[in-house]
Amino acid sequence: MSEAPVLQTTLSISGASCQGCAKKIRNALEPLTGDVDLIEVNLEDQTVALPDGIDATEAARIVTEAGYPADPVAEAHIETEKPASSSSSESNVSNPGGNAEAGKKKTDAKVAEPAQGDDQVHLAITGATCASCVNTIEKALKSVSGVTHAHMNLADNTATA
Image (cartoon, rainbow, N blue to C red; front, top):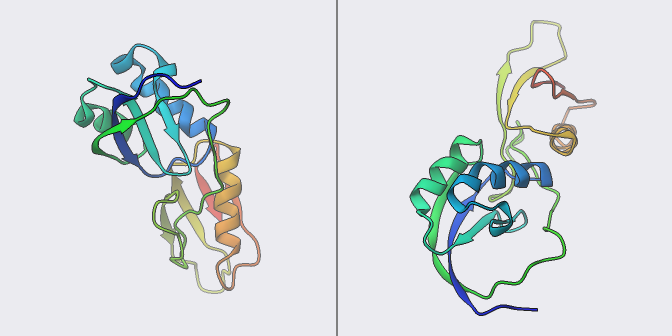
């Protein structure tokens, strides 16, 4: 059942790919709203909707500091409805092939040049927070031409391919 339409502050985010990411964003913004249930994270659209009256610039700063680059969009006239569950989608990550789609998860990686005769590349990964992120990164690495295997270690934020 819908409530009366309300103005909401909206942020455009990037890098959020799973419910773990959404939870991290909600928890970071809770001090601004007082209740995580007032924060709607849409992983498919890469947006965050907040109640009217929230400082969008401050909210964007907090979300960015939590690891998800964010920018205020604008106030929008949105009809609120409590969803049964938050949406999620499979996302791509930046990879050496450069085929990540705009608006999808981007993860920074530092590439160590392989030693002569070494056919393995070691990457330092940032932005991965859960098993879903690991699977997405491994899948993206395997999609690169010439890569036959990929493994990411979430504990030490490294990947080899």
